[in-house]
Length: 297
Ligand SMILES: C[S@@+](CC[C@H](N)C(=O)[O-])C[C@H]1O[C@@H](n2cnc3c(N)ncnc32)[C@H](O)[C@@H]1O
Image (cartoon, rainbow, N blue to C red; front, top):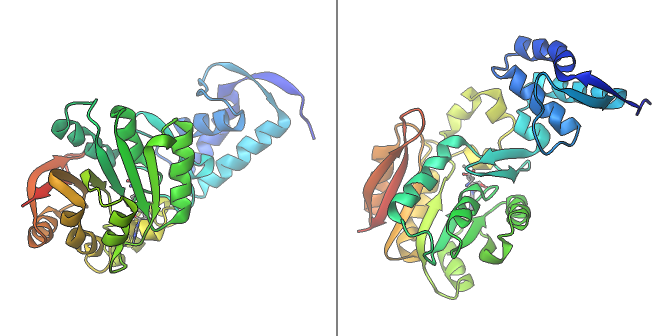
């Protein structure tokens, strides 16, 4: 075992590893290597390609092992258990979806409808995963509160960890419920002492079951199935949750719903059949409609 550190430039450590990642199909080999090297060294900052760092032989071995995991297809976020979303770095785990930049459109559109950042909003994050949506809103709306609901207890643990890290725990509620159970809305309102929500944000699972096999290996092998699988046509979760949402929302409240590519017509119709009116659509960074804003009809 060699723990003695030597000063070496980053480029000479990462160069041979970059080639391994290119051969394995990574499209961001330099960035991946730099993040994994910073993680190995427990740096809170990133490393620069041409700086000198102090590193031991053991640490180089550890870094090379992380590169081998990445070369087998494991996403960097799953190796370091962290992912940036909006303005924060979120802790993730095996049961949380890896937060996606596409979902940031929910936060952008929330601003459009709630311009006053000092407002005291009561928000529901339905299917909260890591808590990236609700905690980003808490960061922006300092007087607001968010209830996080998920069927996965491990996801709720990640929300708790993240809310503690961001000093937002006092403004959160963690609620373990399954929206496929018949009276989850009543159980939720019992928990909330019958006070309804000003706004609801949700990113339900929406991939049709048969398409999961066709997803990139980073997604199909590492994101939890329960966060992806939307049933035969991808719309099962929308049917289940929309049948209850109007009971949970205050009059004039808004619902911000993430959707999959080309699902907008179907999901607007499910909304309409359940007393919800589409008032806006939002596009992601690639120009795909990724968000529907609803209100009560
Ligand atoms: C697509 S992920 C979204 C996670 C997070 N909101 C985000 O945007 O990264 C869907 C979430 O819904 C949760 N979920 C799936 N089925 C559920 C159910 N029947 N009841 C409650 N939550 C469920 C999953 O555990 C997962 O966290």
